Length: 215
Length: 227
Image (spheres, rainbow over the protein chains, first blue to last red):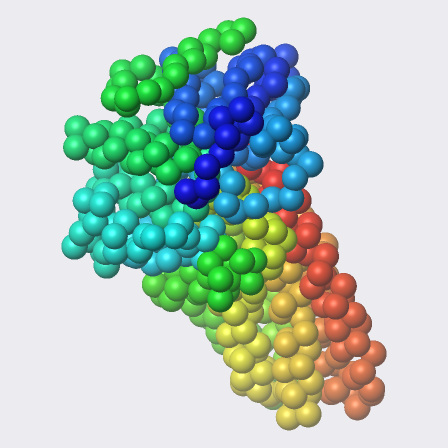
C-alpha cells in the first residue's frame, strides 16, 4: 500500500473504452489514465453512464470495445487479485441480518485487510462507534453507507471505484468521504468516483471528467 | 488463515450464509415443515392401513423431499443479487466457482441435511420396513446434495430475471427426475429384497459429476447475470 509507484506508469488506464446495449451507446469512447495518488471525478447527469462505467472498470461488465489496462497490461489477461480494486456501488453489499462488525469481518476474509488498521478503528473513524453490534437492518441509510465506507477503509485495494459516494450522507459524512479520499491518495492509492455534480468533492487535487454522449 | 486467501473466503462465505440462515431460522425450516405436512396428509387421504401405505412410503417420501428442496431455491442467489453482494463476490477477485460452492454447501446444510435426517423418520411413520429405511437414508444422503447442486445452478441462471418462479421450476424439474427415479428405485429395491447397489451407485456417480461441475456452471451463470 505504502510502496511508491512511479507516476509514469498509471495504475489504471482506459483506452477507447465504450459500452453499448444493442445500438444504444451508454458511454464512450473514453480515454483516461489514473496514476497513483490521483482522484478522478466522473461527472454526469442521470443516465450519462456513470454506474455502467464503474461496473465495467470493476470487471462486472465486459467493455463493448476498447480496453482497460492495469499498470500497462490489459486487465483481462491478468489473474484476478483481491488487492487490486475495491468497489462501492449503489447497493452496499451488506447483509441486513448481520451486524456491522460481522459484515466487515466477512469483507476482510473475502478481500484481505490493509496493514495498520483494525475493524474497531475503521468503525470508529466512520463515526459508527457504539453501533458495532447493531444489525444492519436497524441502521439508517446514512449509517449503512458509513458501514460500507468502513469496509472500504479496511480493503487493501490500490484503486477505489466509488459510485456516488456522497449519496445518503449528511455534511459530516461528505467531509468524511473527502478525508478518506485524501488519506487514500497520500498512501499511494487512487480513486475513480462518480458524481451527478451537486456535491463537489473538496479535495486538494482531483481531476474532473464530464461524461456525456460521445465522451 | 490469511485474510483474502481463497480458502479463507470460502470459509467466511459459508459462515456468513449459515449465520444469515440461523437468524432466519423460522423461515428456513419451511421445507422441513412442508415435508412433514405432506407426509401426514397421505394416511388421512388414503387410509391408515399399513399394508396400503408401506409400498408407497419410499416414493412418497422422495417426492416430498424433492418438492421441499425446490421451495427455497428461488431465494438462493436472489437476496445476494438484490443487496449487491453478488457484485461484490464477482468483483472480489476470488475464484467465483469456489464462492458458489460455499453458497451451495450452505444451502445443502440448511435445507438438504435436515431432510436427510427427517426423511427416514417420515418414511417410518408411513410404515416403511426397517431395512428400506436405512437404504432411504443413504439414498437421501447422496440425492439431496445433488438436488442442491442442480437446483442451485438453475437458480443462478435465473437470478437476473424478475418473476422467474415458473421458469426456474421448468428448468429444475427435468434435472431432478433422475434423482427421484434412482432414489425411490433404491428404496423399492430394498423393499422387494433386490440389490440396492445399482441405483445408489447411479446417485453417487451423479454427485461425483455434479460436485466439480455445478459450481463452475453456477459461476458462469452468475457472471452472465451481473451484467
